[in-house]
Image 1 (cartoon, one colour):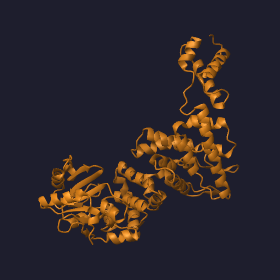
Image 2 (spheres, helix red, strand yellow):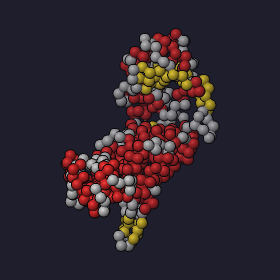
Image 3 (cartoon, helix red, strand yellow):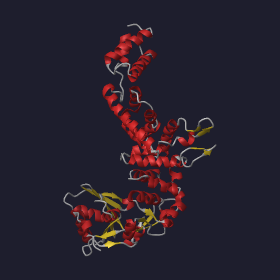
Image 4 (cartoon, one colour):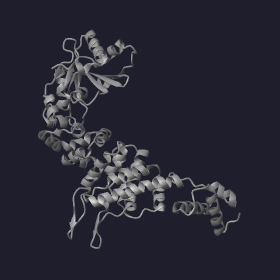
Length: 470
């Protein structure tokens, strides 16, 4: 069957012409072809295989393009890339690969198209479209990838043990594709991932996190995490999550399975945000529950200070996985640390002062924190579910109301330390901190408005009470 329609962009005709000038055969392969057949929209990444030098083909294509784009050459990998508006085209020479046991970086030799398709991770990624003038748009499908697309199956071209052992990152890619596409990993392949799971240790943390992020960014991220847990890959990647699995029972008292609860929260939040860091916060919001779990006959199961413990664990987890230790990490930490605050608020009569404190402590993260807490409602009791959501609605309204009136988000005291020092002729001292704290508390409690004159008046009163002279 011919698929010229997939190749309607002018770049493909130019690649075809350039390959003919170099007397090379060339093919579009992989994700572009897969996504075209799945009708997933126009792909922005195009992989082109040349039977010969991919670098030479890239340079010839650039020469034949009007704007003569710069060709990025990666000599080590024998690849080249050029950008065309919002499209990236990567060129590689067809190759065959052989691996040794302690590395996912293969020994590469020149090969045929068949060799190149053999080295692909999955049958659905081994599909190729011919770019030759004689058979432009012809589909090459050596492993029945089209059939696997129709049946929504992830399957490896060669034996799965070879595929996954050679490059263990493919185990995570299988799970990621299953999550993104809503496909099933065929049984033999899934069993092979479980058999080879320990091999994930040779993969760099950065590559693992890249796949984790893609799973997190999927429509239903729990699919991926359930597969990671089922194949026992998760215990090597995020042991903090597997530690949450299971239900303990003492004297007939049980607690919920915090692993499955976490995945429910993650799916809930995925319906309301595409922010991957907010999704990370949902994934990690309960990790402090494993180390803080205790049972007492008086109160049953408790997880005291699990938010505090969890926020400390976030730093160590990010550091271990070589994730950014910057504002992104602080954002996740803060949300984990504050994850129960709005829930406590929503259980009681919502006071202005409690909402002011929430906004003061959460700052710019308050809206994200509310989104996380709403996702955290996983009760199956409709009465409780509605009650919580209605209360959260009230909290959100109060946040807007309080913020308009009192501006306590990213609070800056209306009276500065310099003004206090000048008024009372002070050098830096403990009294300044006491006065500033008194002003902050008075504003948060609603005793005075967040305004300079009211704060200045309180400053004078507090200074006099401390025995300071004007």
